Length: 172
Image 1 (cartoon, rainbow, N blue to C red):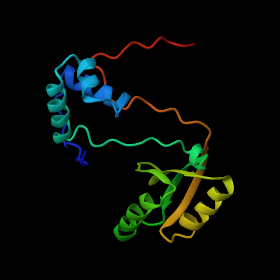
Image 2: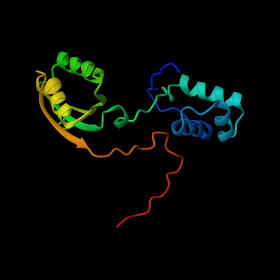
Image 3: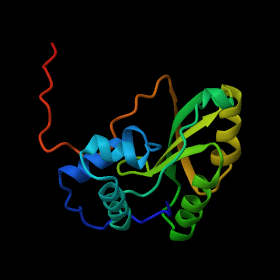
């Protein structure tokens, strides 16, 4: 699938669209025949509906999920970054450079006292220290960083919200 840009406005999704999206979120490698069976539509309809979701910018790509521990990157961290000055040239350089570094899993531009939040994965705490020193502490545009180790990562759903949210029992 060619990458698509996300729509600027929310797209109208019917129950079939939502079911297709949820099935693809659960298993992006599902065959079209099985997708059609699980959504209760013809295979030709499943294919057309999926292509329409791509064309409308709702589905933006598929990816392989890699075990970070399995590839030797078992130490994850969230690094808060505050820039020294909010100069457009430095901001553009920072936002173009950081996501291209292989250790960076995600970068978020956030509000508040922090300007950016980086999610990185490296092989060891020593590698984490060196990465912060090499790429952040020595960067003239970076004024302050704060590193938080990630002990566990629990993924959320990632698909569209259901028409009606299930009730969650109160805990005491």
